[in-house]
Length: 529
Image 1 (spheres, helix red, strand yellow):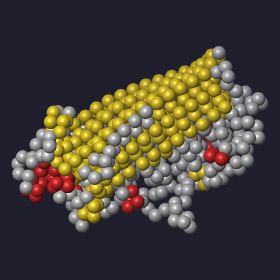
Image 2: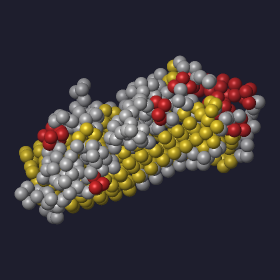
Image 3: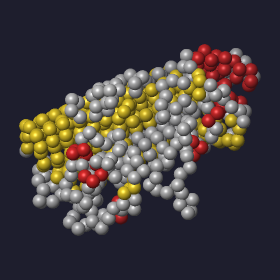
Image 4: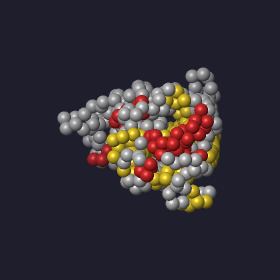
């Protein structure tokens, strides 16, 4: 088997090395100094040449590596000013491919780029990595202009080659719910594009390797449309689409099924701020967060983000905002979302906002957030918390309909929760029995909230009766008695240390007449209509 030279490659070496690679490819395939292109095709910059990889000897059976063949074509087209690399129907086994400016990778229907199961077939890259940003990638690009990955074909990361063995039942099927774990060396992110402009990813299907699927870092003018990401809902660290320090991004019409965050906006220690991102018309299934901003990856600010017209299936959190490393998350609009949190997990939160002080003492905040028009089936709570000294302000929840097929009691679970995305510094709020929980906030509006509670003595619907439920961030398994839908009685709203609340909810009630609908502790300036 051919092996990539498994040594670190520096970022500045790529562009100088591409000319040499192109020359080697020209000799190997008899191309010469000019591209012997197939039929010219229309491109963004006029008519561009195209080359079909099987015309240059790429093996379509998946038994031999096609890396060198495809890379030589990419480099040759780039040297000639750009063009289209056509991946025809077939399976093409590859290691790392380096994308180049003005080159369009076109995966035709029936085409699969299959990641090699051998980590030695991938180039080892040496900057900005951690356990999820590994040194190995299938498609990689840096400092590019005008690059596209499109078509109805598939990029398959050969996931199980990079997973540890997992528990199976007597029929050989995976035991559920159980988290799959990744090997130490894994291909993640599968597609990694950095410091680039005018990036387009459209219509392809992506299956994960060892971890993250698609990651863009400090990119501008990005279009992601019609992309399918299909993974096991127990797959390790398998974020669908991650954007770190990206600006002017349009993401639409995507279907994502995965285990970890489906869409995640980040700011890393080495990234810029994230700004001007529009996410719309996506269908998402994940045991983690559907659309997330931040968590530990919130070192810089994030602002001007819209999330609209999305549906969620079995997603423990529809969307979540986390400032945990000092960044400010602001100007966030979420509209027209619907779905359920029926994951095989405990402590689901259809909406979560959390500000936490970092270990180094930094603290940021969340402000100017509007959620308008949400319909949700859940057994959990909307949870909004802030550590002392942080900012959680100007939050508007409007036109929300929440239906409870069962009510989970959070109180016995909160103190033992170990997930770093659960408010362990605010355990009173973490265990509060209410549909909406807010602590340490300013200027909170709840307008036209409606809640459908389960009836007295009603059983839990069959679809919500999971024999076992796993706890996020742990291996702990919980079992419940589903003969009754209520394991606790809930207020509609629990609020502590909140300054300024506007309430206009004429049809809102608690889960039982014995409870007030609003439970307040040290709340100032309440305007109730």
